[in-house]
Structure formats: C-alpha cells, structure tokens
Length: 193
Image 1: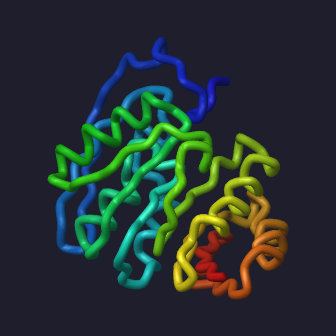
Image 2: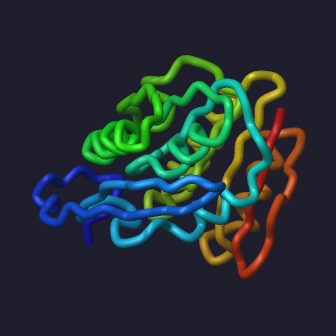
C-alpha cells in the first residue's frame, strides 16, 4: 500500500473537489488519489479545527497535505501562514487550494523541519501515524525548537494511534500539555514551552 507521505505521481488519476462549511465560511479543496484523506476531509483534522482557540501571528501547518488546516485557520484568524510537507505533490495541491480559497501561503517542501529555519507562534500537526514513532517524535522535538517563547503546538492524536505514549513523550519536551478535547478516542493537545 502506498502512503500519503510517499510521492507517487502514478496515483494522480482522480482529481476531485471537497467542500467544507465551517466557521461561517465555505471552502473548496482539490485533492487526488495518493493524498491523505482524499475522499473526504479527515475527521481528526476537523476535530482539531473545532477545538482550537483563536490564534494570531506566524502559523506553520506542518505536514499540511492538501492544506485543510492551515487554509481554514488563515481564513478565520489573523495569521501569516506557512505550510510544509515532505510530499511535493501534496504541496502543489496546497498551493492550488490556497489560491482557490483566496488565502496567502508560503509553501515549503520539507522533511519535518529540514528546510524550515523560522520560529512560529502556532504550529499545527495531524501527525503521519504510518510513518512511525521515530518520525513523529522527531517532528515533536523539532517543533519545540521552532516555537516562539509564547507559542503553542496543537496536535490531534487518536488513542488507537498511541495517544498515551505520545502524551508521555510530549511532557518530556514541553512544560505545559493541555488536553483541549478528549472524546471518542480523539485527543486535541495544546503544548507550550
């Protein structure tokens, strides 16, 4: 099985448009086979969006996929948006979707933070579970290094995907770990230094 973090242009055979009504706005997202949650907008990502407080400043949508988190948050908050993904095909869809929804973004092709030097007030992450804990934990560690002193990392994680071990790891990296939401096995976490 091919995973969404692996580029495979041979899978791009069925471009489609998904629609999202949230926060009083209508969004349109183009997607294609081979991208994460290509048939419908991911429920965990929607849960993250619905449980985040208002944000401002510099926002990094880490592992952005086709851009749902960052584009939605940029439309309803005062942020300067940066989006990154290891998959350049997903990133090309993020750029298309930002234009489609009249949102400005700075898109960076990056394996976690390898091509990112800036610090951010807010980082969002729906971690790539199938990439494994080593990759996920590296993303958490590097996110801690790329937050401003008053910044926050927001993560969605499911119990069945290791929420308890993730929380333990995050408590080693961050001084504050607030559980914003815990329902039906889905955790929304806000972490700060």
